[in-house]
Image (cartoon, rainbow, N blue to C red; front, side, top):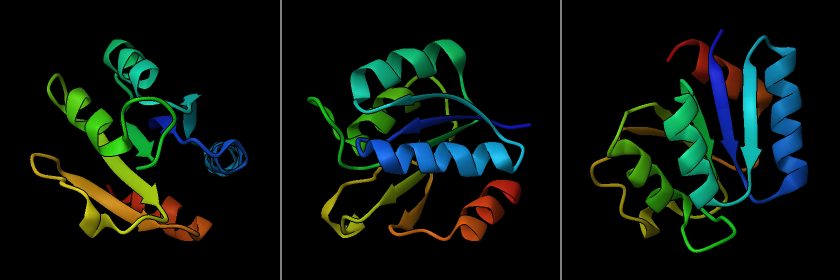
Length: 114
């Protein structure tokens, strides 16, 4: 069973992700809306997968948050965002990207085959 951290500033979307993942046998460790607390949690608990929105509350966006986590360990990071990924610098990251809105089956398939 993969342990997953959700970092998403839209509460309703985050709760929907949590429901979908739990229903499909994944363990959602926590949901955070901003990067700083997500980094602290990720470095302590080391989730297998981080579902990361690009636009977050607080000082850090999702790309910056992922880069800070990557300095210490390398989980699978799946960015889920409505923003254009070409507007951001993902250098130094290995990641997957899904555009919102997402299809449940596509997310589950990506998680099962990663």
